[in-house]
Figure 1 (spheres, rainbow, N blue to C red):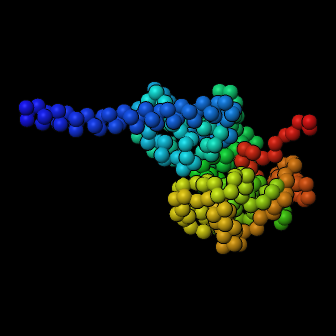
Figure 2 (figure 1 turned 90 degrees about the vertical axis):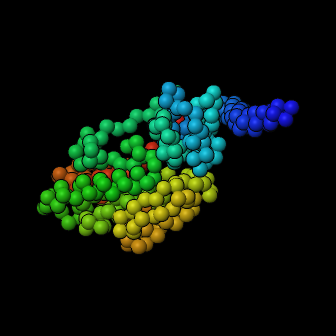
Figure 3 (figure 1 turned 60 degrees about the vertical axis):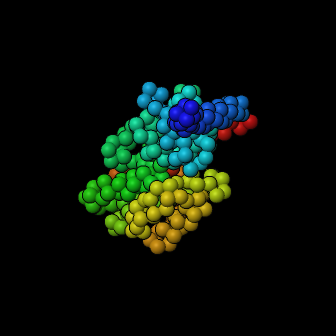
Length: 302
């Protein structure tokens, strides 16, 4: 009798973890399915920018990606596989990508319903037009830390060539950088660090796409190396804190930013470029477009 009681007790103890795990899994599945249903009903299935694609053939359902996202219930586990359950609120942190133990996640732009064209660029970010370079989100790099890295790298690529280009008029800068978001600011800081002349323009204010985010929104979670300024070791940062960081960078690097300068045309003139805004004209040997993907939407006029 005692042996039977002991056996039952042992079996009960052994059975508790699987039962608990099954209960939690089903609970998590129901929550994810409910969130996905609400998202579909409200028409919020299209992500606005960089977002994860989860390959169902590789995903093993560890759910490591779900708590990794600092935005909350963006990802869920349904039928044992990871899935975007609230795509419209995803802003491309990329933490899910780093958390996946089996590399089932890739970061992409666009969807089957809404394709996104990404320009073809050379390794130095140059477009098919000699002298015009694209960096940051417009070129397919939406993560802030990596976009900052691109801003630094494009100047490093250009510096040797610019030093070879002598004889330009005094009012022609080495580079004209369009866009004072994270990428453009990093490019300008690197230009200062390398002794290059530059003009940094933005159609609005400093911050770029970040300005459109809601108040107190967490916009990045990884440290980044900013030229001259040094490493920013934030693991979690809000919109307001990040904007304060950029203004601190501008102050400590003595960076000049021309705001409210909406670029309307870029022309090649006598071997260099003339960048024409609503208010002025600027000249540069090279042009760097760091304008993001939002830019100025075309309106229907209705």
